[in-house]
Length: 386
Ligand SMILES: [Zn+2]
Ligand SMILES: [Zn+2]
Image (cartoon, rainbow, N blue to C red; front, top):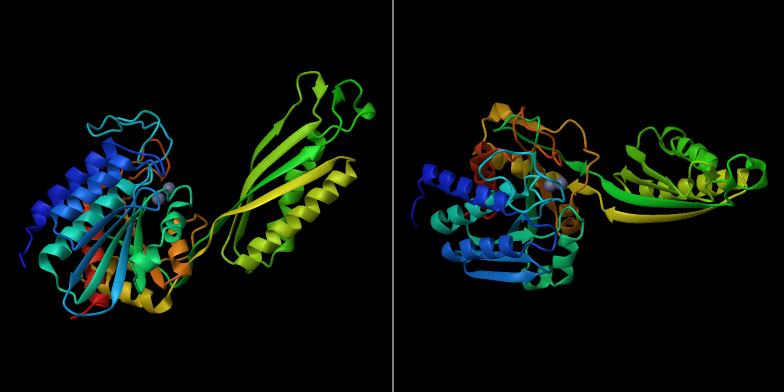
């Protein structure tokens, strides 16, 4: 076992992170990224490196001692279809695609942890390093699971992290129970009879219905769900086939709903159908609702949350470790793994000056790399203690 020079590892992780940042790839297209990850894992001398798991996913396996327990550490590799605004020398070289969510940083941190654990050990059992594709789509984790992840590379628990703009670097937060929401999408198609703008009484136009419906949908959260349930219903698009002097016969309303329990998601859908059909009937048009579930809610296991707080104390200043105040109404594909094993998802500071996630000026803060790699290694050692 060789002790790594922390400064050298930090420099190396920064180089990897910037290399990945300069070569962002969209979900399920992470070919270069996956090859980069697999090449590093092989360099570190892992026991096994499997590529092409669920499309472009990579799984590295590291065994030490004789323990039969296994834990998984997970990072996401995909970028977004956003044009980067940056003058950094390592800015995106792939026009229209950028690492605007810091998955370049998450990948570099997990590689750092793999190098650290491969070189220094300090655990008894198996660590699986899971590099998943297509997190932003909410499809990558399922693709790996459908490709036999749990059978081919079994593990008992899983841990993951996300950087958090606004939270100072070196700060750590998580909470037991619900921490990130489900995401549902909806599309409501209104169909009537368009016609001359000067003769509204001779048709059944759909724009006035759409306006009423957008307003009525606001009553799902404010008047139909329990105030104790956190939920969001956002209408994000309204498209019609109307023109300057013609009333639309078609109107399409699209939007996004968030919640933390499947029962609440089901209630939102049920009320949405009732309100859409009722509003349409009042205006003598028809409504068709298409409601889909994209992300499931993420619930942290209470016992593992305590374990991550204990592990975090080895890496973070105890004054910078906190219980997250409230669940976030953003969603995470990591939740799919928790249908199979218990796990915990945590947040690490990306700095108070950081641009928001999914913003064209966002950049992962390299000062956070050592904290992420350190946390991954610490939780592995804590759960697979010698
Ligand atoms: Zn994202
Ligand atoms: Zn993300």
